[in-house]
Image (cartoon, rainbow over all chains, first blue to last red; front, side):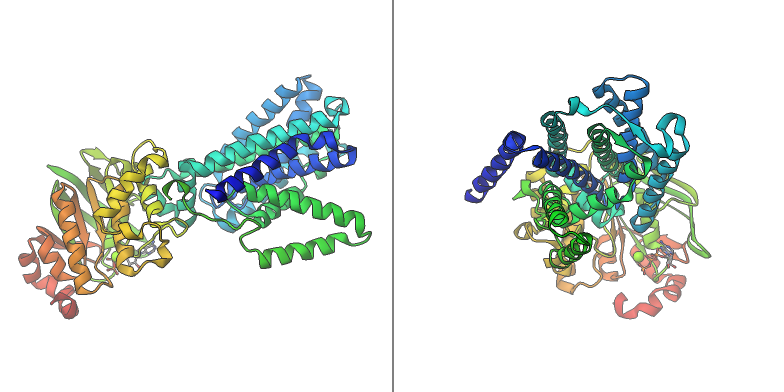
Length: 306
Length: 245
Ligand SMILES: Nc1ncnc2c1ncn2[C@@H]1O[C@H](COP(=O)(O)OP(=O)(O)OP(=O)(O)O)[C@@H](O)[C@H]1O
Ligand SMILES: [Mg+2]
């Protein structure tokens, strides 16, 4: 009982801090917080796929797809912001299900390679369609909410809140059992009645949707992007590292991972003038070595049955 | 009533004819035994029946419906349950969680996990694993892992239960417990197909026995008939006297 009340107090405090943060800080911290929340969305979305044992590099592709679809529909078709986001999500759902079906037979490293190839193909498409995407020169949109960072913060916090709600549902419903079973053996799970195809596709599609939303937010927030940035593999790799170091298969883990790593990265960037990435990398290696289960260390007990 | 029929089933793995034109049928309520030497294709038959491996040719009919092309989870929903020769528990879940997977997904529509807690506990009580419900599979002994296999299969509410070598690796006393458990399951109206090397168990449980060799049916009949058959003694029992006793 005591343990639970402490947990709720911590969650409530974090939620309150998240809401008031932009009002008590300046532009620099607001900007940093916005990027951190965006990475929290990406890390959580990466974890959604990981829960069904999918090691995906397709998140880069969905991030770029979200960015470009919403930017292009906003600019060329004059869609309002919410509609451009909606179109991006719908397109992402179609693409994710199609890619999910095509890669159904692949697992482990083979799935990872296929998802990597997907992201690379989208990069090439973005480069080769200059009439639509602006090609290598990139694309520019007017700044989001007239550049009012408080509103931008509110939007990305809302997207993260949505991702957290989805994640909590996955953790507390039959999805959790299906994913845990499938991680040990998809065949045994299917013999016991689990429609493994459905759960694999759901996890992949949900995961794609939130990467897409992060990408759509990103392009409007930064007002400009080029294919090499929107389809940069670092996005997918960073999401993966944050999820793993925070703690896989949980809601707190990836969010915490994103916050901690983003703060460390920024601190090092500011204080270590040369080669901060090397030290950052060493830190990541140490993290993986000493915290194999991440910051939270998953307690994969089934909460309802305790 | 005939609950299951498999007609002229074939399965090749590369050059190996694991199942080679096999046909048999199962009556509702019976316990059918399948015996045969190692590599005869017994486990492969189970894989064909539960849908984990598609047949190369032939037909499978369950409850009057052609299920040859049906996915494994749909066959489970129709009422085919099975255990694995090598225990395959979900290692991230507790004993209760393992059974809950089957309880939640054993129907065509998954139910909320909170709703199956009581039912899962009842199933565990049936196989005598209640005291271990919060343990993880890594903490269980071999006999308990076998019981968990049975509990999971039972939790899907099967009408036909496929048991693959439940007794392998067990002491005689442990065999007896599982033997009684299988009798009880069958008395509740669940049809059973049993793959088994321990002949005492086959003799006690099975009304009918099919002997397989090289993927084919060598012969079929009651226990005394097949164990007296010369071809069976030559192909199987002759080499396995220690087990056969
Ligand atoms: N997935 C597979 N891939 C390739 N070959 C297989 C596969 N499954 C079974 N085999 C082969 O098919 C043949 C039949 O195997 P099966 O496991 O059905 O035998 P079994 O009768 O169950 O034997 P045992 O008594 O040892 O369990 C064997 O030669 C085996 O090596
Ligand atoms: Mg076998």
